[in-house]
Image 1 (cartoon, chains in turn cyan, yellow):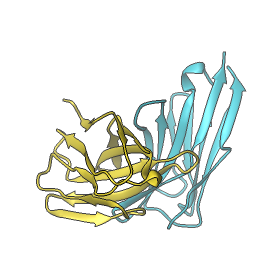
Image 2 (tube, rainbow over the protein chains, first blue to last red):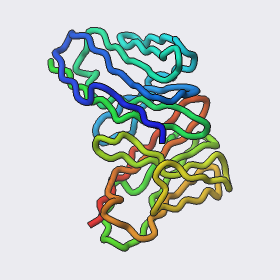
Image 3 (tube, chains in turn yellow, orange):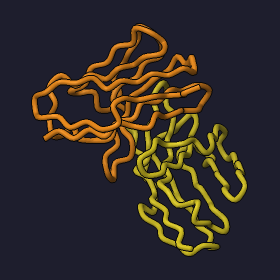
Image 4 (cartoon, rainbow over the protein chains, first blue to last red):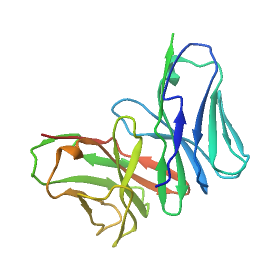
Length: 109
Length: 110
C-alpha cells in the first residue's frame, strides 16, 4: 500500500492569514492531484501536477510538486471563509489513485 | 449533463443483508472506480474498471463485488453486510488525470 501523509490534519485560522498544507510519501507518483471536499459532497478536483518541480497557481492557491515526485504542497494566500473544507491529495500510480488522509481547514471570519 | 450519479444517498442495513449501490455516468469515460471514506483515513480504493467487461481490485476489495457490463454503469454489491462496512461510498470516473466524483452514499450497517 502506498501511503500519502498529509499535515496538518486540522487547521483553524483567521480570515486573511496564509497557510501551507503538506502531502508526503515515500513512493513516486506519475501525477498528483489536489481536491477540496465540502460536507455531504464528493471531492472536487482543484489541480493536477505532473512534472517534478512543477508549480501551478490558481488565484490565491499555489501548488507545488516535489522534484522527486514524492511530495506536494498547497499554499493559500489571504485565506477566506469560502476556503473552508477538507483538502485531499491523491497520487496516481498505474491505474490506481492513492489518497492522503486529508487536512480539514476552517477559516474564521 | 448529470455527470456521476449515485443512488441511494442514504441506506441502513442489518448485518448479513445484501444490497447494491448504483453508479452511473454520462461522460463516456472508460475508467470508473469505487472508494470508501472513513474518518481520518481519506479515500480508499475498493474496485476499479478500465472499461466495459474489465474490473480489478483496489486497496480494500474484501466484502465487495463489482461488474461492468456497460460504459455507463458500475454497481457495487455487498453480499453480506458487516458493521465494518459502515462508511461513505463514492463512485468516480477518470480521464486525462482528472477524477470526477459522485455525491456519495452514506451506508450504516447495524
